[in-house]
Image (cartoon, rainbow, N blue to C red; front, side, top):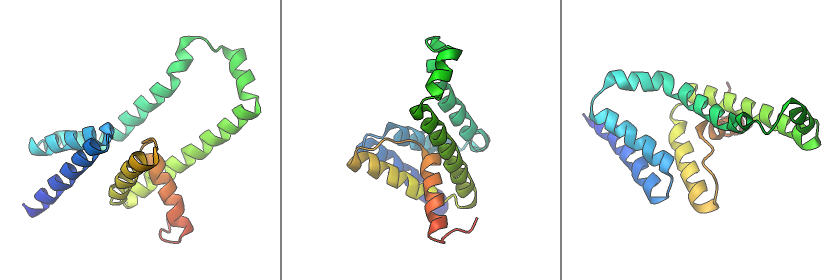
Length: 155
């Protein structure tokens, strides 16, 4: 009972912090999970635990690719954009981001407790440094690399 209370309290804290600091994604996520927990739907929680990350990545990729559907950029224009210095640097940036997110996913599997720090750091960054909540995988990836550099994680 005490564990259940602590988990619900933590979700409630994230809900309030998200609302207070205007981070609707954190608030909506915590609120949704709190409702699922209060409904005591273990089947729904298992589905979310297994598939939510893939669903989130799917919708993120869809959002990123929407401009390509507007048919303003053809194959020739696409090649011309990619061949520019900015296009080449963007490709390198994409590779680096994919690598970092992969490292973040690995970190979240071996140390899921870091998610608390990632959420707090994201909320603080958005609230006080005019940052943008880019997502837990990017933050986890950067955290994974920093932890490796500091020798605090070996994997």
